[in-house]
Length: 129
Image (cartoon, rainbow, N blue to C red; front, top):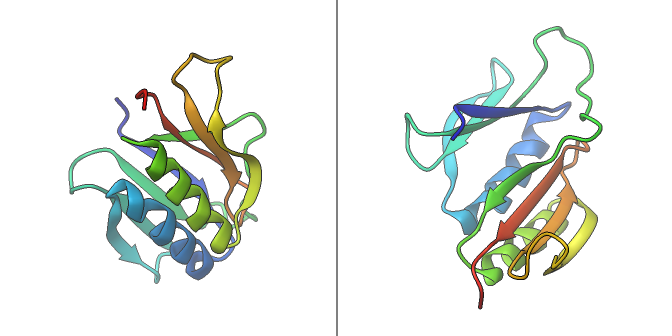
C-alpha cells in the first residue's frame, strides 16, 4: 500500500537496536545499514515496502510528529505481545499495552508505544483468536 515510511533519529545505533528487536517478530529484517550516511532500512525483501530510520537531511534534531502513528500488521496476538515486549526492553515507552481495542472493531488487538526518539508506533492484529 505504501512505498516507505521514514522516522528520524538522534541516535542511529540505539534506533537500530530498537528496530532490530521489534521487527524480528514480524519477520522484518534490516536490509540496509548505512551508518556513514546516518540511515538504516528495514523490510521483508528488497523492493517491497520499506521502513527507514535516519538523521534528518536538514541537520536539525529529529522530532516526532504530533498525531502521527505508524502501525504494523501482525498475524497473531502473540506477535503483538512479543513486539511490545521487545520495544519495552529496548527503551520504548508505553502508549497502550497490548489488548483488545473493541472501539475500533471487535477483533482489534493492538499495542501502542514510542521508540527512543518519541515516534509513535502500533502493532495490531485484526484476526480473531
